[in-house]
Amino acid sequence: MDTARPRRPTLDTVAGAVGVSRATVSNAYNRPDQLSAALRERILVEAARLGYAGPDPVARSLATRHSAAVGFLLGQRLTAAFSDPALSIVLDGLATTVDGHDHSLVLMAGSAGPRAETVARAQADVVVAYSLPEDAPGLAAARARGLPLVVVDQPEAPGVAWVGVDDEGGARLAAEHVRALGHERVAVLTFALHPDGVTGLADRARLRSAAPGVAGRRARGYLEVLGEAPVWECEVSDRALGRAGARELLRLPGRPTAILCASDELAFGALAAARDLGLRVPEDVSVVGFDDIPAAEQAEPPLTTVRQPLTEKGRRAGELALGLLDGERPGRPLRLPVSLIERASTARLT
Image 1 (tube, rainbow, N blue to C red):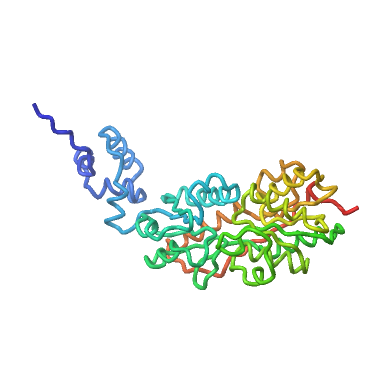
Image 2 (spheres, rainbow, N blue to C red; image 1 turned 45 degrees about the vertical axis):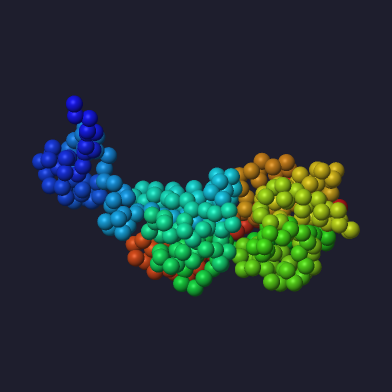
């Protein structure tokens, strides 16, 4: 009794059944413009009947040195792609742009920054790096492989395609808004100014030496308008950490009457902290966020925030990645505008 497993159908199997060359079958999948619609349809129907699913993408990448994949490099755990609202929207914009161009997405992440070996092994032709520190091993690995690189938010580097938003300008809008409402005692709640995991009040030296990136740019924008202000630094942009930090700020002598938050997630924590302490928003304390994720409008009360074009940021990153794959050179940094969205979490000081 022959117990040998049946052989899987191949390009040659389909070519023999249709009566065409192997190259013609390959063109039906990879270069459909080279065939008439009728011939391509006949090949695909016969391939389906034989159980042939198409060329092996791994084998094709080994043969051509192209995997038709866009690597998306995170500075957080992989779950952040689904749990971080702002990141999810950016990723959706990127995926929508890449979809339809015969490219897939490969997510790469590490708990303390992307591990170099992850990038070194990845089947990817271009890397989109999302909000990483300058010394992230994943960035070094991408550069060592000579992969085209698109950076979203940080770090900015000469000769690298970059897309982000006017973080400093947005922070200035938020600070000017609360100043115009009469608030003089204003505090700032931010995510990490340095990648060292420190949480607490940031002194002048720490603020001056803030690592280049989103948090530092937003802090500078706030302080350009405010001058002096207490700044509480959280390790990451997280509601629970924002809640704890805002409680500390609201217990300071000369309690602040407004809190400017470097993200909506931190602002949601600040809203909860005010409730914890029996304070009303906005009657006792005004709160401003940054991002304008969908939940901001549904917050209680609806959150005043700086709107950044998250979907467009992802879309532009995708366009840059596709352009690099087509041989384009990185252009000038693309800094997208922001706007202030006024809602019920801020009010004039009475």
